[in-house]
Amino acid sequence: MRIDAHQHYWKIERGNLGWLEEGTILYRSYLPDDLKPSLSKHGMNASIVVQAEPKQEETDFLLSLAAEDASIAGVVGWLDLESPDYKTVYERFKQDPKFVGFRVMIQEMADANEVLTPAYIEALTYFADIQQPIDLLMRSSQLDAVVQLLEKVPHLHAVIDHIGKPVIASGELEPWQDQLRIIASYPNVYCKLSGMVTEADHNQWKQAQFVPYIRHAIECFGPQRVMFGSDWPVCLLAATYDQCMEVLESALPASYGSAEREALFGGNAARFYKL
Image 1 (cartoon, one colour):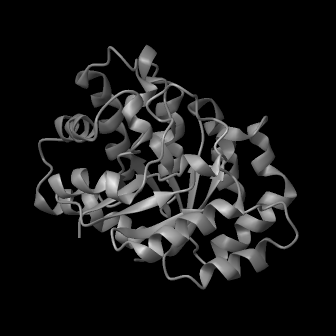
Image 2 (cartoon, rainbow, N blue to C red; image 1 turned 135 degrees about the horizontal axis):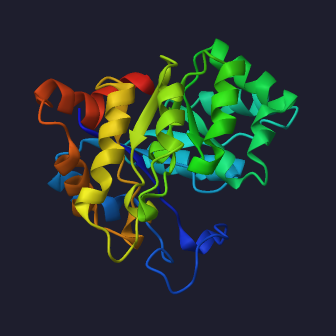
Image 3 (cartoon, rainbow, N blue to C red; image 1 turned 30 degrees about the horizontal axis):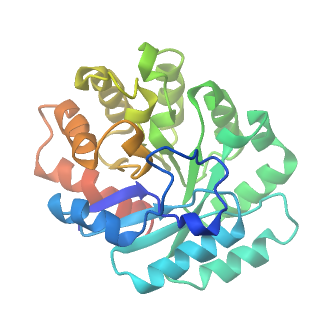
């Protein structure tokens, strides 16, 4: 099965995405029927839809979409890990077969070290113990907190979204390279080759810019712990779905054969999310 492991849906009428800017290409509804032509063109059987706002209602909304559409293989929702009833809410979500995990939005924390507080460590240790898949969203400047998190919860079953958001626009490689290598040393941690075009200059990026980042991520995590994600429709700020595919394909090592491609374009996502 070929799977796009990272994309989003939203309905503009819900009026709940404060980060959307009026007048941009993103300021409209994006729903399953809008993505299906691209999935079909690239032979994708299904996708993983990921939350775009930190609210439990967002998870319910995405699960309602998934219940009606077979193209959604799984939903990565959101949990308030600082709430005393997070386990109760988790158990409710878990009753839905399309619920495959949740995302911790370190990127939105005023201080990334918030993820190292006792409440987060207790909750993430609980989920690590039961091997619950968790997405981690952060900027490259916050990777040190992720390194410290894994020191405290080394068995976390997690995936790094968007290769840790290195500053591709300026060609910055360090300390991202070293930090990603440390993170990859934890065998339960995966990496999404996603969200890269929006970290480059939206209007003047070149395919060659992405090669060192993609190659390094693959070198660190190996062919069995990387997965393709389009980050559609956010990617549309800088590139089409087709261009996102071209960026990744053009950067793959020459040694990548059918087995590695099957893993990258679906197999690893299916295993990580326990589809």
